[in-house]
Amino acid sequence: MTDIAIKRALLSVSDKSGLAQLGASLAAHGVELVSTGGTAKALRDAGLAVRDISEITDFPEMMDGRVKTLHPMVHGGLLAVRDNAEHVAAMAAHGIGAIDLVVVNLYPFAATVAKGAERDEIIENIDIGGPSMVRSAAKNHAFVTIVTDPADYATLTTEMEAGNGATTLAFRRKMAAKAYAATAEYDAMIASWFAFADQGEMFPEKLSVPFRKGQALRYGENPHQSAALYLPAFAPGGSLADHRQVQGKELSYNNLNDADAALELVAEFRDGPPTVVIVKHANPCGVASGDDLVSAYKAALQCDSVSAFGGIIAVNRPLDGPTAEAISDIFTEVVCAPDADDAAKAVFAKKKNLRLILTGDLPNPARGGMGLRTIAGGALFQSRDNGRITRDDLKVVTKRAPSDQELTDCLFAWTVAKHVKSNAIVYAKDGSTAGIGAGQMNRRDSARIAGAKAIEAAQTYGWSEPRTKGSSVASDAFFPFADGLLAAVEAGASAVIQPGGSMRDDEVIAAADEAGLAMVFTGMRHFRH
Image (cartoon, rainbow, N blue to C red; front, side, top):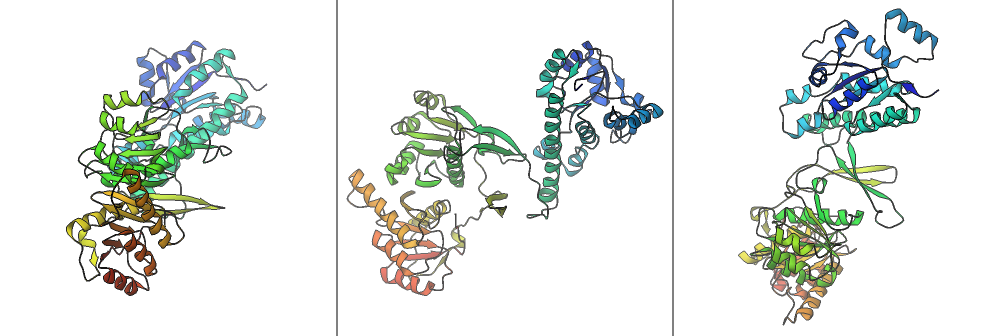
């Protein structure tokens, strides 16, 4: 017989939601309720009869509640194999009563960390007795039911009603699996906090990083691949981890990947003027700042209107109606914003498939953290690329120094290039991108592609010349030869920003001087693969 009747339950929870209703349901089945501290009080306040755990252990709770359930009278009642004669005899000899149900949820460690508590308070919110009971009950799930999530209280109640006060083995197995996942996540959160926050270790010998399933996705990068979104216990604010989807179709793997790329780039301008980023296949195809979002959007779109079709858009301000109207003129997959006014929501409501994501804030581009990429049989971890430069970091290496406007455009192009797949070349002028070349195997081709896109834009919009004329150009890594720089000269660039550090820097500098370009070195590379 695999059904086990529940006659005695031990309840000890931090999250009291649904507790009174569960207690009443158990009592209606004639279950004896045993509890600890605040949980016992909450049950009594609900008018339920409860035995204190100290009555079972014949030992008082002590040390500010640190020691209360760590006792053989508790764990013997949880771990005894009830069809084992020796176990049954040991229970009888020591007066140990069986415990058939354990309802436990753990001290709120993650929430305590998230609110910025002091170290002592964080340590006090490391649960010891709770995980011990959970693991004991889960191990002995052949005879004991374990419930760790208030969301499962209703399921437990239904199970007991169907079984006349008993639970099935299938149910207990399911709850045991969930319980071990809960304690594994809990321990991983603690280990992660100790390693990264408390000890400051970037690459600990043993790495525990807890993730929880946020949502299932329709499919992966391609329809034959399956996918899901997992969220870390400690997620930065303003990220996709805490987004709110206002409308539109279900988000796909590609939507989220592209939206993340767009958010990370627009976050670089979180303290700047109104800025719009348009992304396609995780690469920017247009970025612009302006006096308002609608003018910034129009300027960003003009960089590469062909690639923008079906793209992902991110803005650094609450979205307004006029900008939403402009965006609605072409097919757009996703729009990300800190917030949106009613007018913008009303505009997008007419576009049923368009996904509107609100993040409440933008991530801090200077934040620390780790990046993860899987490889066959392992994973690569690195600190995230939060490197940023200012004018004070730049070194003028040419005879001509850049003008103030050229410097401004250099820094704008450099910021965008950081988020373009390598090899990356970005032309910028007057606060917007004029051409973007991404993902080529050599730097010269990226420079030529970016220039060709600028020519195409000029033809599309009827300009007399491409906007690369008089622009500043950024390269995410050094020019190994002068050919890439000469391609930028051909496109009409007047200033260059690049890391420097090539064996042929002198050759590249000489080519810039001969063409009358101003060039600055950053001393920092921004490869992105």
